[in-house]
Length: 117
Length: 112
Image (cartoon, rainbow over all chains, first blue to last red; front, side, top):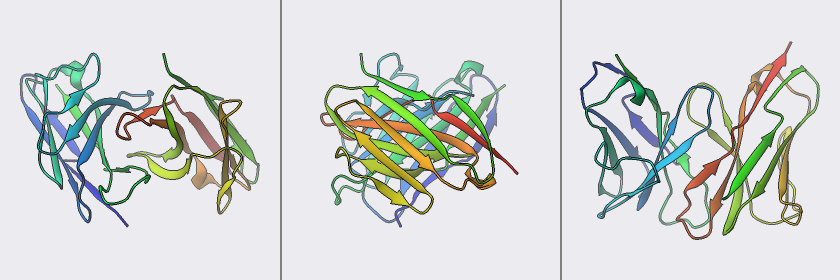
């Protein structure tokens, strides 16, 4: 079945560091990928929609200059958390849809746990 | 403002019990309602519902959507400890490219 690979699965770094998270669709092409964030004991919140070859669409309240999204190919989207601070510590999850199959659910990556010290 | 409300927020049952999880919603531009199971990592897909009144079934799990009363239920029969997880209800919009709006989830604990 379709697989979405997310890397790294766990990051611990110092405040002020920039962190890049990769999301790859392994056996399908994805025009659109989605980035979600989940704080402890809370549900997933959509951060942004990543569009191949164009700018990402950010949800209200999400700073586009802090969370840089690049979707340079049909199989890869990256999220860079710039100058991360402890309040950015969270579980970041990407998902993708197969562009060739309509009305199918999203496939999720395994997520990245980000801890900023 | 769109809303999706899941109930109960948490539930503890014994192995073998049957549980019913609820998801009610108020959504404009509704496309579909989805159920996911989340353990320690990212959500795993269970069901996608677009039509009212048609039950979807997978093993001990089943789900149905009522578009008139704006709710869905997820049933789990003969529960097992491996069913312990957070069950998330989400919906997608017809005008937003399939992005998902999640409810807060129901935390289910199945005890031996």
